[in-house]
Image 1 (cartoon, rainbow, N blue to C red):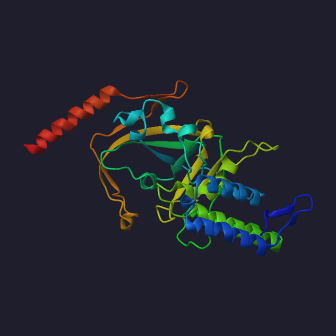
Image 2: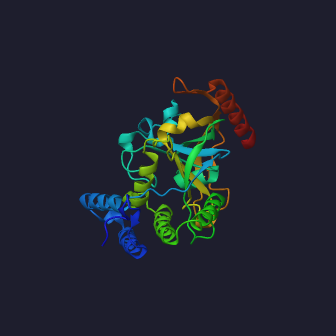
Image 3: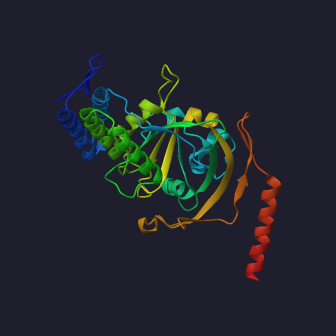
Length: 327
């Protein structure tokens, strides 16, 4: 079985589409068996062989300007699990390097900022539990900035998000302009990656993110090329939203450079409804009436500022309303 896609860069010589497809099917079978079933040593061997095989970078990118990005931070994973408000802006970003494991867009010890293009997807992706205190941050691309974004799509899925549909249409136009053999190779490799990005992965079996995390790491963790270009973000359909809505993963060290933090809102979860039949409804969660919001941030000093007086007034108003309701 072949070891690499490209046989000779200088001669622009590729292995045949059939040989490449056979190798892709080999990795596809490993993925279907469940990578969590392999030992750590075996996973490292699979990773090494896969990186050697994928010896080309295939990106399908555009400049993207989403109106808003939403990110959910579950406060219980910070401050020793205490039910307290987040205090610093770093709390809203990706995890520290030494606290990350495999993710859909990151290898272990890599920090990526995961977000969604709407509030509902952000909630469905993170699924906070009853009693959790969550912080929903809203972000926007800064004026004059852009994100060079690699787009994930799958031609075999028909209910894709608008972003993925647009990427697929553009891919077809691009493929039709390529040499037919190269077009076939690129399509096979692209399809493999989209399958990996769009597969269901259990939270306790994150090793199954291996192949998508390798590609993502290659893009998001790379330095700028000689022309100053790099992929800064990856857009992919939300698996938990049945591919109809969109997630965006950004290199964590670019977040504060590229995005404005518009606001944060703190909710306490009182009820949840994560039944898959409810995926398109808006009643995923019910929250406590005490909702804390701020738009006051000290970026330079890494500080979130809260209006304690406003919070106190809100508590008094809610208490008065409660007493009126029971009388």
